Amino acid sequence: MNRKAKEALMFSLLRGCAVVVVLTLVIIIGYIFIGGIGKWSVDFFTKNPAPDSHGALVMGGVFAPLVGTLILMVLVLIISIPIGVLGAIFLVERQGKSRISRAWWIVVNNLAGVPSIVWGLLGVALLVYYLHFGLSLIAAAITLSLMVLPIIMVATKEAIEAIPASIREASVSLGATRWQTVRHHVLPYSASGIMTGVILSLARAGGETAPILVTGVAVNAGIPGSLSDQFQALPYYIYLMTQTTNRTQAYAMADAAALLLIVLIVGMSLGAIILRSRYREKYKW
Amino acid sequence: MASKVKMKRRFGLKRVLESSIWSTLLFCALISVVVLLLVFGYLVGNAIPFFEQISPIQFLTGTNWNPGVTPPAYGVLPLLMGTLLVSFVGAVIAIPIGLGCAIYLTEIASPRVRRYLKPTIEILAGVPSVVYGLFAALVLSDWLAAVFHPISRLNALNGALILAVMMIPILVSLAEEAMNSVPKSLKEASLALGANRYETIRRTLVPAALPGIGAAIGLAIGRAVGETMAVIMATGNATQFTANIFSSVRTMTAALAIDVQETAVATQHYYSLFAVGLLLFIITFAINLIADYIMARFKEAYQ
Image (cartoon, rainbow over all chains, first blue to last red; front, side):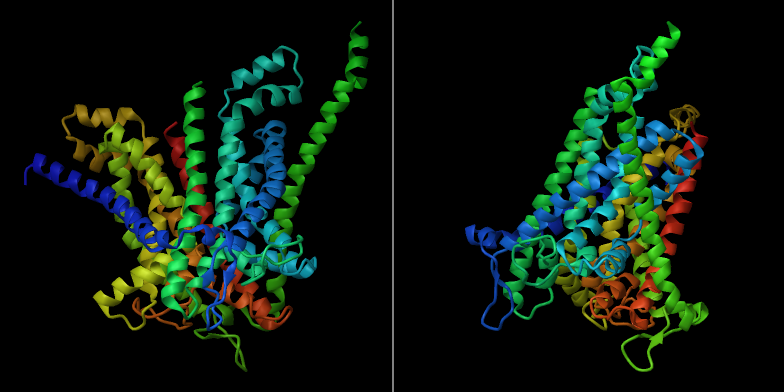
C-alpha cells in the first residue's frame, strides 16, 4: 500500500472512532428520550411516587425526588462553596508556591479522584454514626460537600492562576493591600472561572447516587421537613425503578426520570461550558 | 513622618479589616485541610479493628467473600477480581476508540467539527452514572444476551462496556490535552522533512505525547475502578471468584454500596467494609498519584 492510501485509510479509521463516540451518545440519550418522553406530563412533575396494585411505587410522579435533589444541591452549595473557594484563595494568595501549599495541592488533586462510594462510607462512619446525625438530609449533604470540595478548590486555583502576575503587581504597586488586590482584581477576573467550577461540582453532586444511597436517601420519605429527615432523590428513584417487579411501568418511569435528570445535570454542565468559553473570549491576556 | 505612617498602618481600620479577612480565609483553608485529613483518619481507624481479627494476608489472598454466614469469610479476591475484570476489559475497549477520537479531534477535524465535537464529549462526561447504569441494565444487557447468550443476563461484559462508554470522554479530553502540549515545532519539522500527516501523527506526535497519553489511560482506569452505580446496575452483583466475562460479578464498590445498608454498626462485617474501602482508596489514590506525576513531568519537559 502506498503512503497516500495508508494515510487516507488511517484517517478514516480515526474519523470512525469519533463517529462511534458521537453515535454512543446519540443512542443512549435517544433511547432514554423515546422511552421516557411519553411519561412527561403535569402529573409526572407535581405528584409523588404512588404504589400500583401490588404495592410497587411505580405510579404517580417524581415531585418528591425532584425536590429532594434540588434541596440537596442548594445545601451542597451553601456548605462547600465558602469553604472551598475561600480556602483555595487563601492557599493560592498567601501560601503561593511554598512547600506546604504544593504538598497540599497534590493531596487535594488526588482527593478529587477518590471514588464516591468511599466518601459515602466515610459519611456513614463520621456523620451518620459517630456524630449521631442518623440517616438524614444533612448527613448526605455534608458527604456530597466533602466529595466536591477538592473539585471546587482545584477549579478556583486554576481560575486564579490564569490571571497574569502583572495585574496583581500593578495593583500592589499602586498601594493596594493584598486583600484589596484580591477583592478588586483577582476575584472579578476569576469569578466566571470559579463559577464554572462551582456549577460543574453541583451538577456532579446532584447526579451522584452511591454516597446518598448509604447516608440518608429513602424509598418514600416525601419532602423533608427538616435537616434530620430522610429524603428522596432523582438518581435513587431511577435506581429503584430498575429493581421493582412491575417492569413495563417501572422502566418507562425510570426513562422519564432519567430524561429529567439529564436535562437538569447536562443543562447545568452546558451552562458552565458556555460560561467558560465566553470568559475565555472576554479575557485574553 | 515615617513613624507616623507606620503607626497609621498598624492601627488603621483598614489594617484590622485586612487581617480579619485573611483570618477568615485561613480558617476556611484549615477547615478543608482538617476535615479531609480527619475523614481519612476515620477510614484507617475503622479498618484497624478488622485487621486485628483477620490478617491482611488472609484478607488479600482469600478467594471467598461471604460476611453474612457463620463462620464468615473475608477474602477480598472475588471483589478485587470483579473490579479488575470490568475495569480492564472496559479499558481495552475504550482505549483505541478514545485515543482515535482524541487524535481526530486534535489533528484532523476542521475547526467547525471541533466546535461541536468537544461539547458533545463534555456532555458524555457529564451524564450521571445512574443514567449509564439504567441504559446498561435495560437496553445493553438485552443486546448482549441476544448476541452472546451469556451465563447471566447482567454480567461483567455488560459492566465493562458501559464503563468503556464512561471512560471515553476522560480519555479523549486528557489525551487531547497531552497532544496539544507537544510543541508545534516538532510537528512542523516532521512535515518539512517530507512526512505526510499520518506519518507525522504516528512517528512524531504520538511518541512525543506518549507519557501524557499513558497518564490519561491511568486516570480513566482509576475512574472505572471507583465507579459504583453503573456497575451495580450492570453486573448483577453475584459474589464469585471468576475471570469469565459472561458471568455475573460483584465489584468492591458494589459490595460497599450494598452491604453498608445491611450491616449493624461496630460488627466485624461493618469494619470489613472499611478494609475494602481502604483498599479501594489506596488503589485509586496510587493510580491518580502516579498519573498526575507523569502528566506534570511531561508538561514540564515541553515548556
